[in-house]
Length: 429
Image 1 (spheres, rainbow, N blue to C red):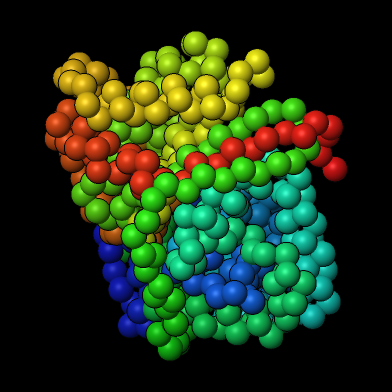
Image 2 (cartoon, rainbow, N blue to C red):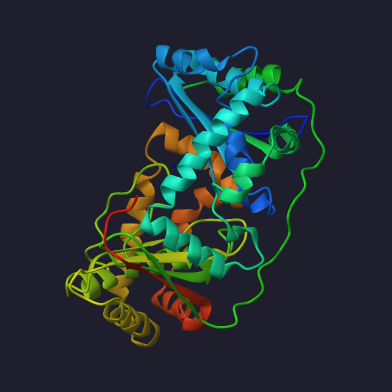
């Protein structure tokens, strides 16, 4: 995971990271834009995700009718994702076809068409996606938890956006968003795989340097005020299963305590790879919450998750309550485990196992060339690539005392939102 890499900034501000990996004849190209749901205001929620969809509707050079075909014909894979702080696009191709990914991303940085008919067609698709999600208990519960946790900050709303906005956003709204944020000085191009750095950089310069820099994109700065106490909420809806989601306010991904919290998460709920698109797979059966809730038949499952973000976000834990038990029983057992980790001595061996599991899961989430290219760019979205390179060394320095202190500071009831989904019976629509 520490193979040499290089970083370059083009005259137009494009940040380029290159990492040679000669284990397989593959090249993975990721284009990252510093824009996500964090940058959206009421009335325009969901505009980043919708703009991402429009990037697959083609350009004059690469019409939508041929895009999928040319990637598949060359034996490649591609996709895109929009999240809280960023939007990213990737192509993983045979090494001798790498140029295709570079050309597609350079072209759609400036030439996406935003045809009005395609905009209206995609409105139907996204509204259908949103309405389908509203039938999912965990979507409804998670949305309610986020709305309670973030009254001011734009992490308040779902990435897909609010239904009211999806019905009123216009083609011009989408195009203005595209022109404001899809500029080289707001982007990171990360390439990993079987190539020679000098030749790759020369080709990138030829394709991307002619693209002019844009104005500095607008940024929404609305810090969330401190929590004023525990917030509990209930969501009711169709189904037979009771869910609990607990969200604790935690620091941004670049903060020192975030890394300590990854060990705390591994100890409490099982290891998390931090890679949203691959890796992981280690069982959480040795975790404290699994033993306290699942083994004692208070819950069917329990999982935790940390996300590295630009601004302080949430440590989210999800409990699927056992059908023969009440949510109050599961939450009481959960709180007892939190109090234990805050007040009782944590053994060195237990921390060593948690760190070992966190290391292994992190490694699984970085082993492929596609994942290596992912991390080149992703780390730049909330910190820098040095964060990734030093992650394991810093992880090894986490002590039981640091973990317990983090639990005492961040896992207080006054610092959390507790949401419960109560099923009313019947099946979702």
